[in-house]
Image 1 (cartoon, rainbow, N blue to C red):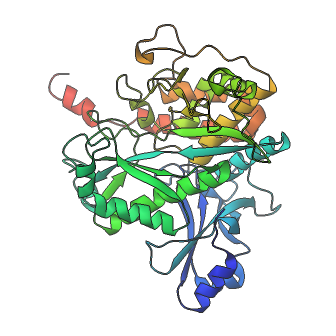
Image 2 (cartoon, rainbow, N blue to C red; image 1 turned 90 degrees about the vertical axis):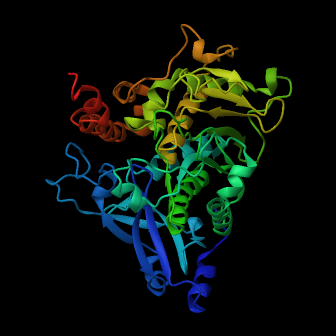
Image 3 (cartoon, rainbow, N blue to C red; image 1 turned 135 degrees about the vertical axis):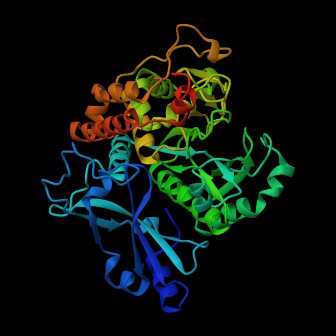
Length: 454
């Protein structure tokens, strides 16, 4: 929850510090979509509600009006949804002059019920399931990205060829190299902090030009809200300095992929750590055993929500710190699920499967649904894997393609029960469309390989 209130906004508007309010919903891709309000009008009436075309959560990356969705179509006329500002998400945006931002829930224009397939509603439903069980989830997502010394416009004009990374060498934890990038990274850290998002650190990551930004954990919905604002903010700040950032999961064959590791733990509503048991092995409670067992049991079914694009699956390569096996292990970065904070109340499970291209609301919701199923059915946790998971034989693998992950999601009884049939059918269509679009495209690799020799 932001500490910046509607009363603070009204004061800033009256005294001339804020003149623009961004009212944003989050689309299927995790992007901010919405309107720029004149601040005086927002505090007068638009803080109650505004409207948007309902196609915004039935499009692809290119904003195509994709056929095959039950919820929206040309036949139904592409009407409105209501955007209801959640004032708990109100933030000042220091990197944009005179600007505040608020996230909105998406409601049916007629019934004013939340639109079930909207990403924020999907996560809120799983959060409510936990609350009904007397629990809440704390989560933190680490975001990795690549920083380039060109603008987005220059990169596009070059056809995304011969791009110049911010670094010429692997800068993992490298202080001198990251000093050279500090103009952008300091602006990101201080900008997010000024927006009310508590930043812990930034660091160089495992490839040339690769960065990571880490913020303090929060309850699941607040963390997803932060994640969406962070991604948009990083791009805006880089753009303002003539630079470009990409959150592609795998931007280049020779570079490491970019991840969004998700740390998760369950607590009581009275703030008691429910994953910690000082008598348990590694400090794990029986509840944590059940939760992690649920993650593993449904690992293939939830992968689509952790890796939603064709490109996402290019990241899963042995020896790159991206996992290939959906197993758990103790402080082992080769595993898809890593136990962290053992023997402390900060004990948690880190999902390393997700890429930086994921939608945080969908990813968090899928993980919670799988974990809740493990708790409800008291699933038994397998023994932790020991050693190099890349070389492990006869152990559970992460689906290797979007096609396989989409099929596993579609066929998941657990996800259909947790999210609803209409929601799963909606995202099945999104996965199918992404695959259809890719299948009919000609890649540079195909042309270079076969132009002369085929």
